[in-house]
Length: 167
Image (cartoon, rainbow, N blue to C red; front, side):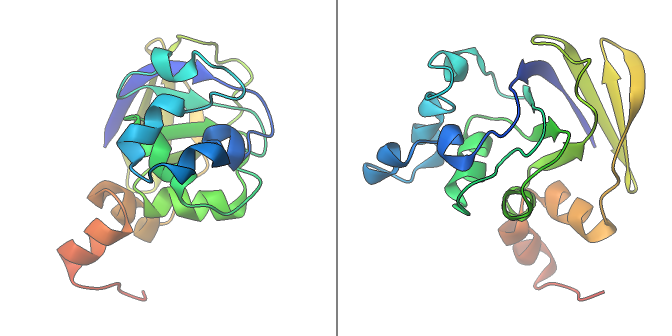
């Protein structure tokens, strides 16, 4: 798979309530509707700058806080299919994979807002490029995780394969 988009830069410790405020979930759980509120508590203009295909680039501990799956769903609802960070909360990590979002564990210090980021996945390898220049590889994902992401999430994977192979 190949992904390309502009970097949308965030810092460390972006918790799930920053991704989508709890007060917004009272009205709807529609991920596309909620996407317009993406990161509003830390940057009210963030959702307006995000275009489908853009890549969220953050520091350490992305997705910490509560285990609400809607946080990953809202990112997907905004058309973002890749999040790069130095580290992720374990619960967010699984929620995002299960929603078809590629998570790239990578040293993001040198990536700036609006850099063109390209991600190529082949087998379990994740190659990262910035402005057309290779800058490294992300931590590899298992073959099972890559299949889930390639299908667009766990539900689509099960629809396609008729179940989950324990292998």
